[in-house]
Length: 115
Length: 112
Image (cartoon, rainbow over the protein chains, first blue to last red):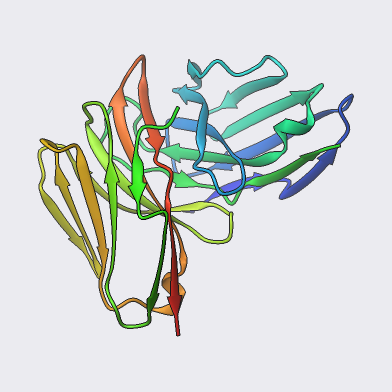
């Protein structure tokens, strides 16, 4: 298995809703990432998990809450989002978080619309 | 935050022509990577070049890195319509953690 699987592919939620995005990989990668991408912009780093521990939080608002229950699974919990949070949310993984020898494997993303 | 700036922002060529995209960055890096993205979906890793390397090839792709000028270029030879996509450079460095930051991207259109 050489894929990163993200679910759901599309999500529409109200500003008072709570929802979660899910990301799964079975490649034995020990680093996992959340990126946010607005239309016609590059992906922006949100969170980095290294060996299931949060190692980087790029000053993301607390309405986004990441969770890494095990080495294969990464969640992003969403609560009280704003319309400007509408974007493509991308999950990625890499083989070894403490070196720069590997590229990232990306999922196909969750397109989130906040209404 | 955005590390790399890419040039041009958009490029339109005929099938069979070569496409060259450039990336400049601001800080020291450990490696530089190039990714392709089709239609706003997931990114695909194309090639990684380490800071001590100057050139790397993979199929129709050729990447160069000039750390003295803090710049890289991606050359796609004999382009095909299927190469139409956005191409991003991404720089990896240790700034408060192991981070990979993406540049603004070049949108490539290959006309059949």
